[in-house]
Amino acid sequence: MDATAKPLKPSVVEKPQTQKPTREEAEAAVRTLIAWAGDDPNREGLLDTPKRVVKAYEEFYEGYALDAEKVLNRTFDEVGGYDDIVFVRDIPFHSHCEHHMVPFVGKAHIAYLPTDGVVGLSKLARVTDVFAKRLQTQETLTAQIIDAINDALNPRGAAVMLEAEHMCMSMRGIKKHGSSTVTQRFTGVFAEELNEQQRFFSLLNLSKG
Image (cartoon, rainbow, N blue to C red; front, top):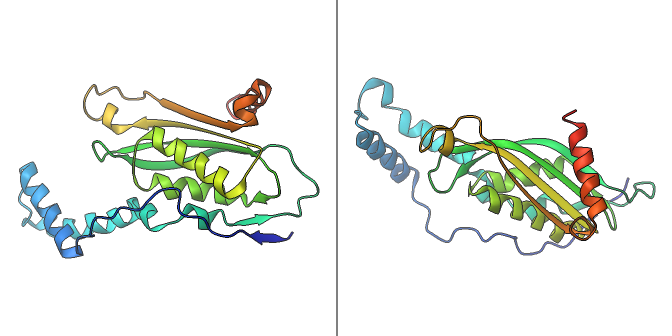
């Protein structure tokens, strides 16, 4: 199977331009928040917490250092003439709400109709993580994933659906545990042809039957 590397385009999302604080400044900020919460950042159990939190943040928000175009840059042309729907269901993801910086967790369902080739299936999961591992809203995350797929693959159509539970609803505020938020976006033939949308939902429901 031959792989084709496409020229890189500008990232579909601009990276933050604010000067990044030092690790020491970040750890100091964590100590301040611990004290603001009412605890003593100098007690034994919390002494190393600022270092742990900063290290965790590097994992939670590593998407800022990743480029979706590079993830989707390599496509495969030798697919035996296959030009029908490619659908990856139930891609787990976790992100953080940009309003409260608490997690939302769910699954992504991604489909596209190839034009000139296909991308490795794992790349659809990886591009989801590129954007999920940033401060987000679910609506923006949905749009960023499908825009990246359209820009990199130029498919005849694409479809993205996200289902997620938001901790800002279950842990605080109205405190409604178990509620799920669904967002979706269609482009190309998925947006123009109702039967293609129905096929997307039919394939999605197969995993829930």
